[in-house]
Image 1 (cartoon, protein in one colour):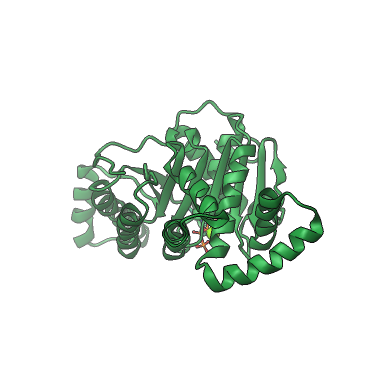
Image 2 (cartoon, rainbow, N blue to C red):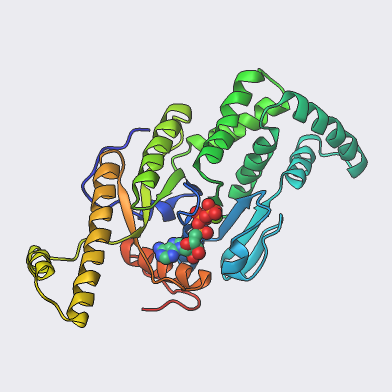
Length: 322
Ligand SMILES: Nc1ncnc2c1ncn2[C@@H]1O[C@H](COP(=O)(O)OP(=O)(O)OP(=O)(O)O)[C@@H](O)[C@H]1O
Ligand SMILES: [Mg+2]
């Protein structure tokens, strides 16, 4: 779905009106951190929220919530649960829905299905993971899916279209149809997380283009530009920096000028990223936080930043400054 280019900050309330929110982006951009922050804010607004990963062997949610996510959702705060959707139990659940038979029959079916799947269905594993998301969206008000990095995520989501082309009928076709129907819903959204760095912006724009081409039914309402530094320096301050730069300076004054220059560089990197991204999609900015903050504290501060942006009345749980 094509969004209009916009000079305005993105309306982040769409995140909290979603039922299913897929988050992806280049590695290390802050997908897990923002999935957790959105989850905390949504839960504090009274929505039954799940933050889940897809078959992730090394969960980063553990460091944030102090609990390792398992296949079955576990509560980590009032209204907030986490899960790690593993494909084998997801296959088991899908078969249980399909045949509804006892355990033994399911075991036989499962062994047969695994070989059929692995030999004949490209992306069978991904299909099962996504089908589980469909089911979880029936149990929660909001399911936030912390996806792998962009390339893998698009490949994973595209498997639905591949299966629909390969199978004219039968259970796998129906499974793909159910996932496709979830993609097409107005309250299912895919959000890309980016950083104000050239390479990351390139990948963000490229991924958005791929999703538009390969998954045209999936809505992409906004990009979250993480670690951003909004413009605060005035023209006068910039001119002063230029003026001081050339002069003789003591150690302390030199440090101040260097700090000003550093701030100027961060601000212009953000402005550049914004210029490129806003040409194609609305963008919301999330601030860069001091180094050395723990994962949970970063999530707390980004939750507060999101709350300010969405002007949400919130009752945040836990350690959230200001
Ligand atoms: N706005 C921010 N300011 C400062 N640190 C941040 C910010 N956002 C995330 N971080 C930190 O950056 C690191 C990477 O974040 P995170 O694990 O969420 O990225 P990711 O995109 O999920 O990574 P991966 O691709 O490995 O899954 C974490 O240590 C997190 O605490
Ligand atoms: Mg992550």
